[in-house]
Every structure is written in C-alpha cells, then in structure tokens.
Image (cartoon, rainbow, N blue to C red; front, side):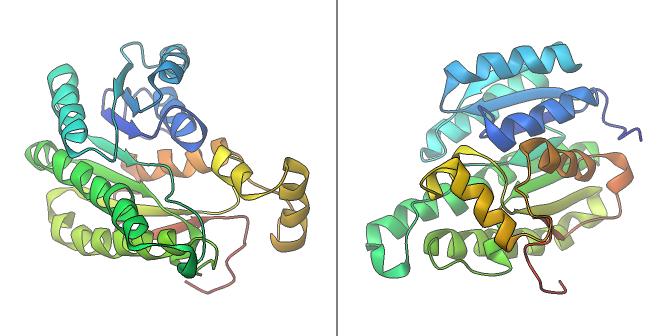
Length: 255
C-alpha cells in the first residue's frame, strides 16, 4: 500500500531509540522527510543514518528537552526553518516516574504534567498552523493501554496520558474539516527500555507476556511503528479521534 506521504515532513519526538526511532524509520521508508528529536542527541546520529538509508536522504536530527518549554519552541522553530513546518507529528516521549498514587509527592505530579501532557500539547499547538495552511496534517500521539485500563503501578501515566487522550479527541473534531486527523496509539507490551525497567530482567518480561497477553509474547517497536505509519498516511484520511491499542489483545474491553 502506498501511504501517499512521499515528500511530507514528519517530526518524530522521543526518536533516539525504541518506538520513536522505529516510527521515524517506518515513515522514512515511505518517503517522508524525517526530522527526529530527542535529548540523547548522540543516539540520533545513528537514527538519521538509518533514515537516510531507508529513503529519507535529508533526514535531520534536533535536540529537545520535553521538560523545557523554550527547548520545545526551539525545536519547532528549527524544524520550520529547515523543512518549512511539519505535515506529520508523532508526539512521543518517555513515561513519567513509575509508582502507585501513594508513592507520589505533589512535585511528581507537577513534573509529569509538564512532560506527559503539557509538552505534548505544546508540540501539537506548534504544528497546527502549518498543517492548517496546507489543508493537510496527521497528528499521532503515543500513549499507553493505561488510558483504557488503568495500571496501579503507573499512577502518573494513568492520569496524564488519559488527559492527553481526552484533549486530542476534542481537538480532532475541531480540525477535522481542515484536513487534519488526530489519533492516539495506546501502546501495550512493546519491548523497549521503558518496559525493561519495569521488570527485574528480560526473561520476566517474556514470562509475564505468556501469562497475560493473548498472543503470548511482547510486541516489537517495528510492529507498533507500522500502525504509526498507517495513521500518518493518506489512506487513513477518514480515521480521526480514535485510540488504537497495539497490545497483542491485552486489553479485553470492547472499545
């Protein structure tokens, strides 16, 4: 399937590894012009080289700290200067501190708000003007299956990723007439550094997946990136305001 995004500019945050890097490469393979951003800029160089080899010869790396409002503004400005603005935004970032509600101080809630909700909204607000001007845009935000079924040990993620999902659902209706779609992906057990940090070792990850995931395994960043690429493309033009769980069947609810 041709995703019809050749020459489109895709900004992917949290792109130094894992899901973000895999998403950037999936978009590059479709001919998108890829801008990758993260704090770990040393790792971005390898992602840029892979993106160039995959089909995005002018792929470029940008530094960003999602906890810093000025840094996000600088990223948006730099992408605008280099590429003329983004047609596709893959809003991705590391999750907030893990723990139960009783583990958290109010400062933890403040920090999680800034990185997990506010930063994502700042990115979205930053790309909307160029998308509106062009009459075409794709916003895909990566969240968690905790927005469908809260997980006791990630209280901050439960709250702020759910808030982001609600905010983007509201936005999707507002911008639908402008040719802009807005969707979220609820990530399940995808083998990333974040998932590895949740378990004592990798064997425990796979054992838990065999018990709890209908597919009896964890997913790969590349499997999730395929969903990101599709929602970023032309054929997905009638899909908006949706939360797609990529979780191997982990969430048992109907919707």
